[in-house]
Length: 288
Image (cartoon, rainbow, N blue to C red):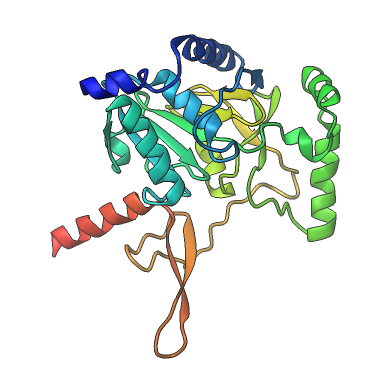
C-alpha cells in the first residue's frame, strides 16, 4: 500500500474498534448458523441499501494478502460491483480478480458464482432484508419471539397461500430456508437456482444487512433446506433445452436480453455469471 494511502485512510476505511465489533458478531453468527445477530452498522460513503452490510463485513475480514472479487447479479462490471470494488481497493490496495478460482473473498449481490467454491474462500452476500418473517410478521419484537420459539407457522401458511393462488411455490428470490433444522433464514435475493448451493457447501457464507443492522452466517457443511411441501417440492428455474447463446452452457442460471436486428429483434439467453461464461468461451476458442 502506498504512503499516501496510509495517510488518507485506515486500512479498509473502518476504524479498528468497528472491525473488532463486526468480527465478534461474525463469530457469534458462525456459532449459531442462520441466527440474526445485531451489530452497530457504520456510516459509509455509499447509501444504505447499496451493499453497506456486505461491504462492512468485507472490510472487517480482508487482509493485505487477500484477493478480492466483487460481482452484482453475476456481473463483474456492473455499476454496483465496480464502485464497491473501487472503494475497497482504494482503501486497502489488495489485488482484485474476475476469476472466481483466484479470489479468497468474493462479495456478491443477487448471485452465487456458478463454479463450486472452496474451503479457503469466503462468500460475502449483500442483504436488503434480513428476516424472512418480515413477510408475515411486521412487528420486530414478535418476530424475534417467533424465532426463539421456532414458531414458523405463519410462514407455512404464507407458502400454502402461494400454492393456492399461483398453483406453485412462486417465490422468485429470497426463498426462505431452514438452517440446521432450527432457524428460518432469508437466502437474500439470489435466484432459486442458487439456493441448493448453500446446503453442505465447503465455503463460509457471510450475510450482512447494513440498513437493518443484522449479520448472519452459514458455515461449511451446514444443512440448509428450502421450505417445501411433499406434494409441491422446491424447484429451481432450470428449463431443459435452454442454453447460453454465447458459451453454450446448459446448466447455468440464464438471463435474457433483447437483441435488436434487421427483423426487429429477439430475446437471447446468456449466462448470468459473466466470468464463468467468458472462461468457457476462452476454453472453446483454445480448442479450435
